[in-house]
Amino acid sequence: MTVKVVADNWIRPEAVEEFIAAAQELVTESHANDAGCLAYDLYRDKADALHLTVIEEWESQDALDAHIASAHFQRLFPTFVSTAQAERPGVISIYEKA
Image 1 (cartoon, rainbow, N blue to C red):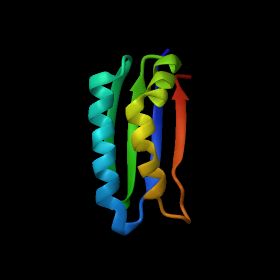
Image 2 (tube, rainbow, N blue to C red):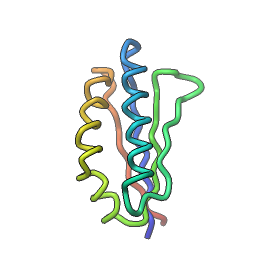
Image 3 (cartoon, rainbow, N blue to C red):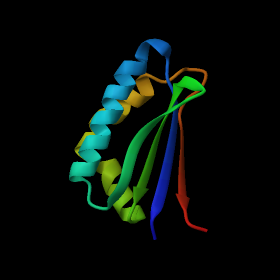
């Protein structure tokens, strides 16, 4: 069963470019190297330029777990934490088809 991930991030204004660079690198690395990656893309909210969302689809929970354990995820994820707005930390939601 596929798994979808929606990772909402609210970024400090001065850190947007740093976040986007890290997220785009993670998108590229995930598409190239992570077995079971069906979709992985970065989106910006048209109404709020500081709200950036990564939307992912994985073949299985095991594929998602392997992605989270990957060297590129472990290297880049701290940037997402460090660029977040203190008053509005990121939210990661994981879905499966009902």
